[in-house]
Amino acid sequence: MTNPQPQTAPGTDPRWTEVDQYFADTIAPADDVLTATLADSVAAGLPEIAVAPNQGKLLQLLALTQGARRILEIGTLGGYSTIWLARALPADGRLVTLEYDPAHADVARANIARAGLDQLVEVRTGAALDTLPLLAAEDAGPFDLVFIDADKVNNPRYVEWALKLSRPGTLIIVDNVVRGGRITAPAPGDPAVTGTRELFELVAREPRLVATAVQTVGTKGYDGLLLARVTD
Ligand code: SAH
Ligand code: DHB
Ligand code: MG
Image (cartoon, rainbow, N blue to C red; front, top):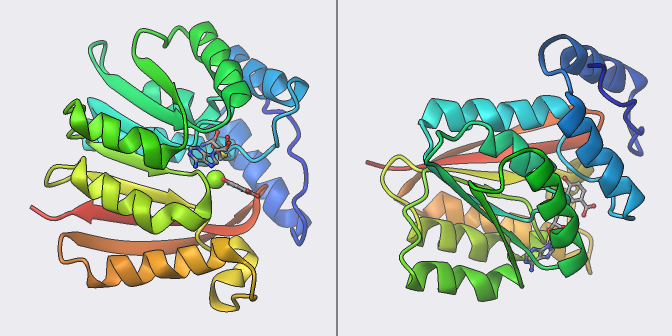
């Protein structure tokens, strides 16, 4: 199925959107479940900040490459990235996704149920810094893949928790580490950028992580991902 026409993010070259649309339509096509997930998220008034289709597919591929059986996601929104990730799980796999906003969590639960993934996926409501210690206390880890995509100011703390809930070989992915290039031009009063720079400093001095970051352009504008593997 053809992916919905993406909105054009500010500062976006029209070619980025056209090429993303081409990639998505050729090799990361939407299906009824993904289309309905985005449509119902918009209808419920959620912000249109889910990963792009080709990025969702990238998450799925990375989860498959990991042979992931347990996945942790921080920042659910309407469950779009959750569905891409959970589709990589085996029948006895598990994905826990953490969401602060109860209204977002409700939309996500309905989308995940329609996707037939509610046996594998648990949406936990609450601030992630409150729910992560509970996950650790109940020995929910180790997770094979952690996708961090919530409030950017807490990214350093989320990577610390991801490490606590990891095993050697766990893949940690952090979304939105470029933000139109503001990463290298932090404005005073932009805590998201300050948090992301703190994240890079933490990763740089953390011997348990081998990491890189890549810039991306596309329907979501100019942004990027950090990828880190917990060392063996
Ligand atoms: N991963 C989603 C997009 C997530 S958007 C996708 O690609 O489809 C970021 C989400 O993080 C929002 O739903 C927001 O409510 C949530 N969030 C913000 N602060 C949070 C916090 N402290 N704890 C958990 N979730 C948070
Ligand atoms: C925003 C958040 C995201 O996770 C994203 O991928 C894009 C934008 C935001 O808060 O603006
Ligand atoms: Mg994001």
